[in-house]
Image (spheres, protein in one colour):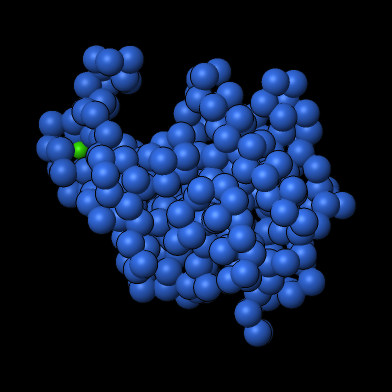
Length: 246
Ligand SMILES: [Ca+2]
Ligand SMILES: [Ca+2]
């Protein structure tokens, strides 16, 4: 069993001895994730119990966040969301996503919310809203005609991916989760986006442990070889840097 052991829940919010640390698979040979074989309940939009109000970014150990942020270059506020979402997924839902998996996705999707010169603010909102290109069938996109009347993605003709983790409106409608405890599901808030991504990834296979589970989960997010490899490369690199700090 792999254990980092430096991240822990705050008082009374969970199992303080539960370790975080699903490792990313190696990009080239898709080597299995390390970690315990944690049994999980069947997950799904109807199967996941409602989350208790939790500020996920407050869960990781501050010193770990400072050290890993400095070493990896992941902005600390984004890292807090990734690590916090992983702690909740692991400890509440029994599904180890890995902070580094979420960080890998965050890097590939939006460079952790820093695309277009913005960034994640201390309150967790991106400084400017991030929208992908219209999903109109051009530029290698799948055509998705507007489903949300522009309410979420600000586009009444087509749908667009939104926020630092680039959810499309139809996915957000089903999976959008409040990660910062303000009662609002906001795709532009890093805590909400990270918690939603964790639960969405967990639903694909029930766990991300083992390459047989990790790869289909990532492909459920974006089903291309190139995407999966980019996320695996980034996630593996982050995990390696973190290991070297110990
Ligand atoms: Ca739309
Ligand atoms: Ca929220």
